[in-house]
Image (cartoon, rainbow, N blue to C red; front, side, top):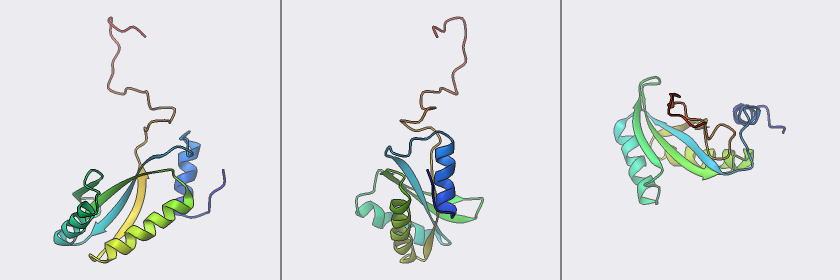
Amino acid sequence: MQFPDDDNGQMLQAMSDSGMDLSQSMAIDFFLVFEEQRDAESALEDLIAAGHSDDVELSFNDEIEKWEVIVSVEMVPDYDAIVAKETELNDFAAEFDGMTDGWGVMQHQDGDEFADDDDDHECDEHCHH
């Protein structure tokens, strides 16, 4: 698969190279960042009012020292669709003096070759595999 040579394309290439099936829908987390807590909370309230109550999260990101709203969107990781969603969310965040700060996916999702791994499991004499 060929992707444009930018941050989004590089991320999709890395996902493809890791064995993720990019033809399957998955939860993609988009990060919106805000300097002020009240701006982040206002944006969160608008997202919840718009029906995103199950797929948004607010926290303070110590690494970048900003308030972060994570919006999880179930979608096929298509380059054009991701760029469009980022643009939409950036325009939304700007209404609250915020901006987008990239996106990501959980490494293990349904459909990828590692989805059945159980990293917390330790074999003992009772295992049957």
